[in-house]
Amino acid sequence: MREDMLHEPDQALHVEDLTVSYGATPALWDIDLDIPPGVMCAIVGPNGAGKSTLLKAALGLVRPVAGHVRFLGRPVAQMRGQIGYVPQRHSVDWDFPTTVRDVVEMGLYRHIGWLRRPGKAAHARAMAALAEMGMQDYADRQISQLSGGQQQRVFIARALVQDAPILVLDEPMAGVDASTEAVIIALLKRLRDEGRTIIVVHHDLTTVQSYFDWLVMLNIRIIAQGPVNDVYTAQNLRAAYGRHLAMIAVPSEGAAP
Amino acid sequence: MTALLDLFSSGIVRTVLMGAAMLGALSGMLGAFAVLRRQSLLGDALSHAALPGVCLGFLVAGGRDLGSVLAGAFLTGALAALVMMLIVRRTTLKTDAALGIVLSVFFAVGIVLLTVIQTRGGAGSLGLMTFLFGQAAAILRSDLWVMGGIGLAALAVVLAFWKEFKLVSFDADFARAQGFPVTMLEAGLTVMVALAIVAGLQLVGVVLMVALLIAPAAAARQWTSSLGPMVLLSAAIGAGSGAGGALISATTRGLATGPVVVLIATAVVLVSLLVAPGRGLLWQMLAARRARARISDGRMLATLQGLATAHDNAGYPVEQGMLQTALGAMPPARRISSLEQRGLIRSVTHPPETTPHWELTDAGHAEAAALSGQPRKERPQ
Image (cartoon, rainbow over all chains, first blue to last red; front, side, top):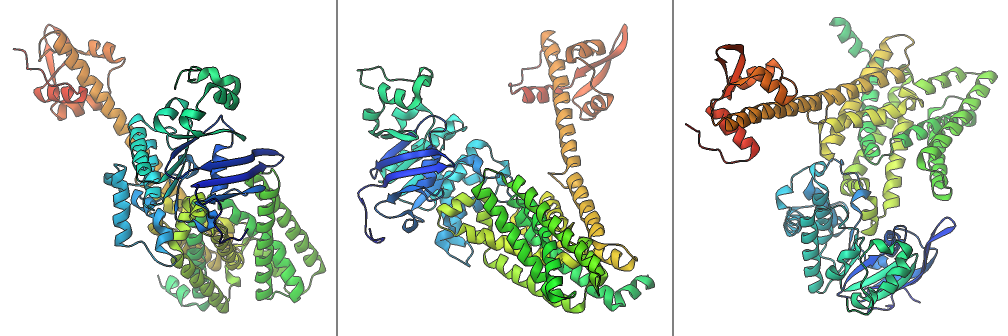
């Protein structure tokens, strides 16, 4: 296949035969996955199911041993700058000496280009992104002074500022307060309604049905994928989570969820 | 004073001073990034790994030729960095273990080579020992040009790629997802650190060079919360420590430079850890004490207010023993006099009892109400 040829351009994310392995044990095994454009998709699965690894492999941060990934038909290398990525909040050192606005401007560094500094336009865009997250009053704060929820809002603002058609978020609701979660979800739904594709690694099964319209269930392999109402079934949940299922909300069998 | 002036008019001392200051500024600047990337000890491994290179350079050149010695140091340093990267990627060992192994193996090889060269004797072989702990007096005027060149080049690179280095230091995964050549940028930073180490070998020596990388950055971080000022301050502290250490060592016979530089730099770190505003230990102790005092005052006022409400008497005089029982222990006299001075409580007598009593003033009632977040009740008549 030639690099400039589109492959599966009708899918926001197309993953085929993807296998990732750390040492001998596979972290992801033979993943075939399609996420159509314009959906708000949750990736769920138990701990160690490879949810973050799937995102990282899709974004080219982890090298797969087999398989390929396309965003809107193109390899990720051709889509840089068009995918907003929100890593896990704990992946960085929040004691880093910098300000909130500075972090958000990092989302524009690629756009600004080599050898140039962020100027007035970048400042304005960063402020607008912060305002969308309700964080405009914190622009000049040190990032070490933020609460967990505020850190998450700043991270999302950094992805937002790129104005990307695809947003990929790794556990954005982990350890944030209810009001931050509401702000994040309202924003993501609005972005989805604008036609963007939102892909979220999510850990809270109780909110899957109310937040998302597309669902991928993962446990090393793909268990199920599709519209939430088709995929969120007791049978699939049991397949993904096994015996720990008693702890979580299961739709009653037969009844419409 | 004239002795000091004599000192500065001496060509050797001026050379040493300028060399050490440039070296300190260079390693301070690059050290700031190394510390923020949590790679402080990489510098340690690189500098120890430079020793076999120094010896090989000596053997190849057949003498203490600075060019080949430094080239050798750079090569083995780079080899060590490569080996370390391979160990981390290809085995299950973590970075710290890989670092420890590489550091000690390379250093051991260096020491073996060093002793071999010394047993064979020959001109200048003794001079190699100075690469262990550094010797300020060994520096030549021509070395300044080398150091200045490396310093200016590093400065230009850091300024040119400022925002990329910042991004990679803060969040390498995000940088990679954005399509930045993260591996290249990280390698660039590492190569510059290796160059700084090579430049500092003569002055500070392989064993303690890492202190000149870490200490200025650690101290600078205490005083500022922006990357730009931190890098600048780190360079300044590095220059000061380097110059101070080299000066003392150059004017005192037989004093190795490395240890003196390290002692000065760590003294700066110690002071910074203690007194830096906001992050300093003393500062935090003071803040904790203020918080304790505020809580103690609040509890005292709340207790007085509660008793006044219970007795329906805003000026109810509370006896010391009652306060003591309610609070668990009497607040220190200092706190009580502070409350009195602020006009929140008033010391009163309540005959026939002879023990001390206190009552809330109007301001005290207002303060207590504000602290508990309740609207203030009308003062009962």
